Amino acid sequence: MAILNMMFNENANTVFINEPFTYATMPRMHQTMVRLYEAAHTLKNLETPTDVARALNQSQQTINNWERRGMSRLGMLEAQKNIGCSATWLQTGKGSMTYDASIKTGNDTANGLNDRMRVLLEEPGIKPFAVAKAAGVTEETVNQWLSGEITTIPLDQAVGIQEAFGFNAVWLVMGKGIPRAAVFDDPRPRPVPPKGTKPKKKTTEQADPTPLTYQANVAKYREIPVVGRAQGGLPDRIWTDGDYPVGATQQVAEIASADPHAFLTPVVGLSMIPRFNPGEFALVEPGTEPELEDDVLVRLNTGETMIKRLLSRRQGIRLGSYNDPEVFTFDPADVTWMYYVAHPVPARKIKNRM
Image (cartoon, helix red, strand yellow):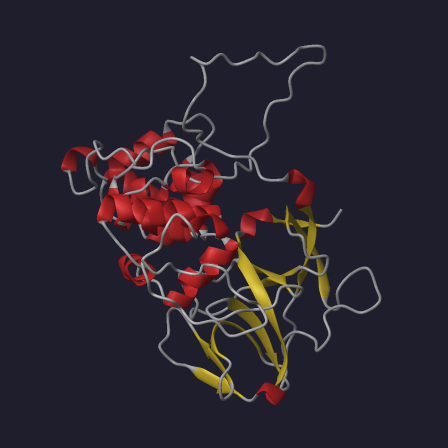
């Protein structure tokens, strides 16, 4: 049987090979995709990458990117919703491949959104105003969720709650899955044990096979500066010989990035909803070469700047949006620079430099 070559040459254009994936080639790709293909075959009998792309409503190029870099957080949630595999298992490889399907769906009036919001707010330290801030809504909206006046919550708002408190976004939206079994970097400080105390060793019986959280590599966390969008857009050169980028404000965010020239810029406009929402910030990493279907920050020679999706480099640079069908095509000579955008950063993480 022919096998799918999962390795891609960065110096050449690659063709999406749509043959059945095999275990002989899976170890050569990112482990989250190895687990996705395993779950797709086991749970849905999907045989090819195209089948998986279609099931997740993703382009083939996005699947290619995931094979090299790993799945995105929203991609894992989509896989949990559409294929039935656990987002935590996709991320860590631990616990059950499937989520707990015994929990009632969100359409069941006995377990509606208002009940799930009560479960969320029963957690110590979680208040309605904090939930509103995490979701990007008003406190009145949270109260309407609680009362049952509003019976649905958009996925992007649920993802904001997940990022802040660790409650599964798919569970919040649909009532499916385990409430706390979600991919989650807990931003809240952890208690520091008193000096002289030794941590207790976990026995085999105490071990939890499905961790609810995982710790990010704190060594990569540092202050990333915010570059403001002055009238006329961003400057033609972000970094010079100084310690801070041109146009840097007094705002920073402590987040992880391996790019020494990474910076943040405010998100304006509605064309990139739900991936990027107004009021959020975009983490830009100039050291990463953008690929097709990546999000990019583009500056034109006119000074105009925009966050878009890179659709094509053939016969010009073609850019698109998530919330707008219009496609823009620019001559490469009209583009001052085009930088890779890693992910959105919520406004709550932005602080003033001390």
